[in-house]
Amino acid sequence: MAPVAARGAGAVGVGVAIFISVALTTYFICDRRSKKKNISRKNGLVEAIGNTPLIRINSLSAATGCQILGKCEFLNPGGSVKDRVALQIIQEALESGQLRPGGIVTEGSAGSTAISIATVAPAYGCKAHVVIPDDAAIEKSQILEALGATVERVRPVSITHKDHFVNIARRRASEANEFALKPKNLQLNDKDTAKINGYESDGYHYSSLFPSDCQGGFFADQFENLANFRAHYQGTGPEIWEQTNGKLDAFVAAAGTGGTVAGVSTFLQEKNPEIKCFLVDPPGSGLYNKVTRGVMYTKEEAEGKRLKNPFDTITEGIGINRITKNFAMVKLNGAFRGTDREAVEMARFLLKNDGLFLGSSSAMNCVGAVRVAQAIGPGHTIVTILCDSGMRHLSKFYNAEYLSELGLTPKAAGLEFLGIE
Image (tube, rainbow, N blue to C red; front, side):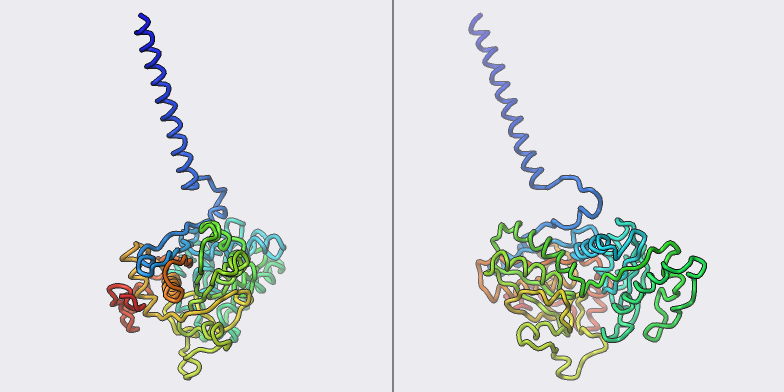
């Protein structure tokens, strides 16, 4: 009987050992998966902004011999890197008392910042009023309207003109403050029924611009408001540093307001001055020459060929011909000039080879990443920003007919447009 009892005890012992082994294995697997996927619950939309993945762009890495990494900002709730900026601006404005719940946040934007403001503002009980140039992709206006923002589309003019879309947005904030101070029975009037830039904007009736319970206005001022810089200095930059374990050699991005490239470059170079930071600049923008030659001018200006649009480029949201307060904070080691052809071809290359469906500024950033890789050589780690997806660029950047009219129909089989065979 003893041997039988021993076998039974042994079987139980083995069973217990197997159970414990399986339990421990399951625990460690689940624990690792939990940490890897970061599945912790977020408290509302605003907590879901930031901490975006940093991915290896396999095709570009293989082609250059560098590790080219892209920060997936298109995975923010509002679909772009500008969610960070909208959140920082609105939070700081509420804390300072410049904005109150029930107030209206106004902004002049080519699209992405406006969409982010329209996404974030309701989380704080506010509304959005956006003035957008009428040459921006129409789907951006459609998204804004779907988000509940008031949208005015106006013709592009110089920033020095009183009816530049940014200046109109600034004016709307002042008008909202005046409106909020008036007795309710005097609020409705025809103050702003004049045409803007020679034609009637989408939202020109003053009485229809602001709700009767409007608690004033606040102009976001993404170009000059240093909350933009702080969003990236305090958020994007530290995330990149942590996600790379501080092991990166270069960072590159284009600039519109300048907040992203300034905030990230300043943070990274404070952590390690050996990290090289670069600008990639689209056609028509003067920043490339400012960085490389110290003079703000463009080839188009020098030749007297500037078109009516200040930025002769198919890309949206990047390029500028002045130094903003945000860009003034930048720390750069150099700059590269990108072309529309390169951006168009890059977008198609990444879609075909990596499944990445990117917007025009993201494509230009990837052009910049390859240029940096070619300049510093193989074996380096280079980070760039994937600002938004191609979903906001269907009517122009991904429109075959539109591209054909501009002579930009994509033709490349690989990366030969960047000199890589």
